[in-house]
Amino acid sequence: MSLTPPRPATPTVLGPPDPVPVLVDPAAGVELRALRSGDLPALVECCRDRESVRWTTLPDPPGGYTLADGQAFLDVVRQGWVEGDRMTWALQAERDGRPVYSGGVSLRLAGDGSAEVGYLLHPAARGRGLMTAALRLLRDHSFDRLGLEVLRWRAVTGNWPSRRVAAAVGFRVDGTVRRFLPQRGSLLDGWVATMTRDDPREPLPWRDPPRLAGAGISLRPFAERDLDRIVTACRDPRTRHWLVSLPQPYARGDAAAFVESTRELSASGGGLVWCVADATTDDCLASVGLEGLGGYSRRAEIGYWAHPEARGRGVVVEAVRVVTGWAEGSGLTDSLLVRCAAGNTASRHVAGHAGFREVGTLPGAEPVGDGTLSDLVLYARP
Image (cartoon, rainbow, N blue to C red; front, top):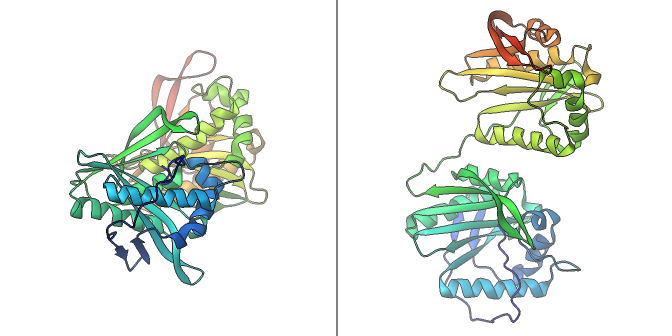
């Protein structure tokens, strides 16, 4: 959520608030302190950043956020401290060799023992773990000094950097609420997460697919640049025959939803999905997934599909070999499983040539594209 409210019609100029408590993490190089007028140029830079505008309720006037908008926000921050219902700190950290304003964090107190956290990071300060350190400071101050019982976090769905910070501090995502968050005249789907003072103050599991390499291929996370290739693969009649759960017709929005689902799987810690890309062109050739991580049985399943251009080249066999080797050395699973429809000779070929052994059959367990039920063949590692 944005740290900057809509601009008031007539800014209220207040005197300085009571001393704002300074919170410091020396190891991370983060200090939370009062917002000052000297911070306004850097604040304006934050609020003109297109990614910040995209995901928050920051004002986005014609010509962009200005120093006057920043001054109005500074007045609102002072008023929040005076009234005690909104506490906003500047995040100070080193940039270009000196400690400067690098973002901010806030608490909106509901008056019932709960509060909502908000944060915004300067684009030049990203990728250093500064906001995670700042939110930890805010969390501990909220529970240990202010005596709050519950902290809440909200964000527009798709704002993965913000969600990653929340998870690193211990917020548990409660779910997605449709048309939940107002943003410049629209209602957008939103995530909600909660942390109570009794919850463990530890990062939640978040497994990103590591970058792997094989003969002629690289394995990496899926990205927006892969959408058109995903659409082509998932519209292919052969793919559709064996993957009957695919939406029909398959559109670019379905491909985007698939990419988001791979990120959700990583965020939950339940699995990993790789885009198998050409090592030279980086074009998407296939998908290989590893699902079921974290279960009590410590058994994971490998699934895959291929772009038509990848067939007959050994691409998927090589990718499954690479993922299998990584999984067996990761310590995350004790056994691996592949399931293939009995008539899907290409998929069965991949399983066998990647080192899996046929271990059984489930009769009539797999629906296929002609409306019939196929036997399901199970493969496992020797």
